[in-house]
Amino acid sequence: MKYFILSIVLVLVLFGCSSVKIQEQEIQLPKVPDLIDMKLYSADTVETQDLNIPSNYLWLNNKSADGVVEHFDIFRVESQDINKIKIYAHVMDVNLNMISNVFGGYGYKICGFEDNGRNITEYDIAEIQRKDISKYKISFVLDHSGSIGTSRAMKIQQAFLNIVDLKESDDEFSVVNFDHRVHKEMELEKDNNLIKSKFPITGLNGYGGATSLFNGIWEGINTIKQSSERKIVVAVSDGYDNYSTLSMQQIIKGALDNNVSIFTIGFGNNIDVQKMEYIAQRTGGKFYHIYKTDEFNDVFKDIYKRINSYYMITYKAINYGKHTVTVTLCKDNKKFTDTVVFYNDDQTDCDIAMSLETRGVRPDNTEVYDPEVTIWERSKREHHPLLPYIFFEENSSALHSRYQRRSSAEISNNNSYEYIKNNSKLEIYYDILNIIGERWHRNKSAKITLTGCNDGKSENLKLSKDRAETVRQYLVDVCLIPGNFISVNSRELPSFPSKGSDRKVFEENRRVEIESNEEYLLSPFIYGDTTFDASPPILRAYVDIVQQKEVNSWKVEFAKDSKILWEQQTYTTSPVRYIDFPINAKVVYDKSI
Image (cartoon, rainbow, N blue to C red; front, side):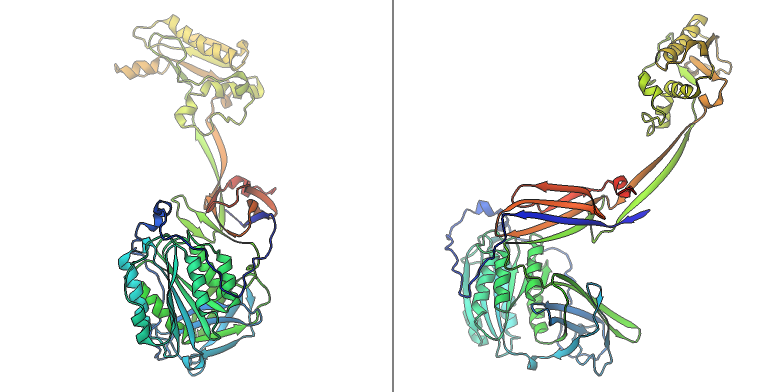
């Protein structure tokens, strides 16, 4: 068994990469017609169903705990300033109540802190409570496409009103609804009663079209960007964006330019997880993936509670790009660890952004995240005894069709028995004359005796001899064994005949017996082979390219060390969602690579 590290590279050739300039003023979205051809957006006409899949989120309860830690949970990361990366975390008890003063009176400490494997020793920790936070401006961007459905739209609207009851008096909320159109339902409003009066529960009334998630998020950013307070967009969607005029990269740049954090909530299985998660990671928000309508209420509450009370860990990063950060909280022999992935590279001014994820695919088509390819080397050695008899039909001296006919070249030049190495025992027996022929040519000295026999019932001695001559003729004409090395005898019954009156007894006696003065000629057929298997047997590359400019070509490569094993290249403008690479285990194992 061997382990190998395979690298995967996505190579794109562009016509150029110029900046996408987004001005500080609002972008005017082109007018979208009220009526659209719904056949183009069939996914938006079928209501997304609830699924019995657990979300596994730790919904934060009210803060009031006794200091016995049960959970350490990193909530989000703000990474715009490389000199001050901010990690927002919560420490909770068994009932998911947040524990205050955990690093003071309760004696817990950070005992492990790594960024891409680099040990972080210099950092600051602060507990932030509502009294330490300035006002929030929060814009809720809510999906009202057809697939949301009227009842779910009403539940989402009610979840928003429920969060209004928790709102701090100086925070302000606004609401943007979208399908293929975008409409600001409510400007920023502070008064709870006014919010409720301006936002009645109406379901999908006036909506029900396609999905313009990015346009909706942009309107949410525009609604709050002028404020100097903390600004957050909470965006909900249950499907792929299929109608926006703005790109994901424009949305991210607009959020970063205006210090807006975007929290994304994806419902169901038909969502673009990569894009929704990437938007949240790049802007200092958090991505939630839920499958049950009732969880909208939990998500809205969780977001609002967490932004109002948290621990903030700040440190200095030394590089740009993708960061995998792991933080461990300790006391005595107890450890609580959480890991978060974020980006602090500046891709927002480029015409293209890309992400690449590799997964393994098992034989049952289930996927393995972060796969490690294992190559299994299996050696086998098989012994197949050879039955030195050739059997014939009743009153016939013709060689039966079950016995394999080979060419002379195939027999004399194939010492490794390529033609039979994976055959069954019976199939190997049907090649016995070819095996004898191949073996004879190894030293060209063995003498062969052929004795023809009959069933002793209706057949005669001449038929016995004819049968022996048939076998001799094949050995001479096809196996190219000189005739003077082969002697022919005949008799009635075999020297050790099968006895009885059953039909099979007579069939067994109609044969030619083969003998030789060299034991090796009729010795068991021994076959050894080495096979290689990969686990998992397939690597699947998920490719996501967000482009503002045409891609001239793209190529995905798998490599072992610096040697490219497989590649796929095309000149279409965008890749497929994923590419499968069946692993040639023998090639990967090859020590010359």
